[in-house]
Length: 285
Ligand SMILES: NC(=O)c1ccc[n+]([C@@H]2O[C@H](COP(=O)([O-])OP(=O)(O)OC[C@H]3O[C@@H](n4cnc5c(N)ncnc54)[C@H](OP(=O)(O)O)[C@@H]3O)[C@@H](O)[C@H]2O)c1
Image (cartoon, rainbow, N blue to C red):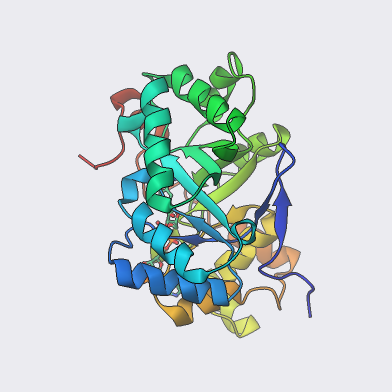
């Protein structure tokens, strides 16, 4: 038996720690379903919940957390500033609004949802100021490439401690993950399951059968052994539990290499460079 468990935390460069695994809540728009999913996840040991202004469910996440009746420091909440809310004043106002909806005094992690070329530095200055005020504990980015991070570094007082990226076996982003690591930034994988598109892959299925685990569990175990953080989403209690039950088996180095070898550089989302240029990812046009 491995001593790893869903309670594993990763140290961030700002001194805080973050659970390595968490629950994503994108597309959970039914309030009752979201509240039940958060409750089941908490009971299974999840402590990190990942929402965003764009998901339109921060208020439901707030209710779900309140219903847990737990100490604030027992959970870790992430939200993200939408493209429409970028800019110094708008970012500050939108985060104050997010905190109201979430019924929280602070969020543990605030991310810039997508890079856009307008307000690029003003938004980040607002992030630094929100952190200084204690309204957010850690600040980070999402969907930032190397050039976005290098450009940010020319004016930032503090660099992001997390970069949330689309990462799964069909988009392993090895170079970007290495770059983040070299720069003391934790990569957090969104769509870690490839949104379900990888479950039938014969390599994954074969490895899963050998371990008596599901395809989803093999994929999440791959993330875990790579050292990334990851936030699978499910609204089904049995899947939420299954996704947390990945700490009692290990992929061999050969199996890790086989999964690494599945990379096709195919994305679910648009290229971050395209979003940077046109100024929005959501809603998809
Ligand atoms: N920063 C960004 O730009 C960004 C973008 C997208 C997502 N995210 C975040 O990342 C989180 C995860 O990404 P995602 O939701 O896009 O995709 P994902 O977690 O890779 O996949 C979710 C899909 O897989 C299914 N699923 C989950 N566990 C399963 C299992 N054990 N067996 C079979 N099917 C399973 C879910 O269905 P059911 O729910 O029906 O079980 C859902 O359809 C999001 O919720 C969000 O918090 C961030």
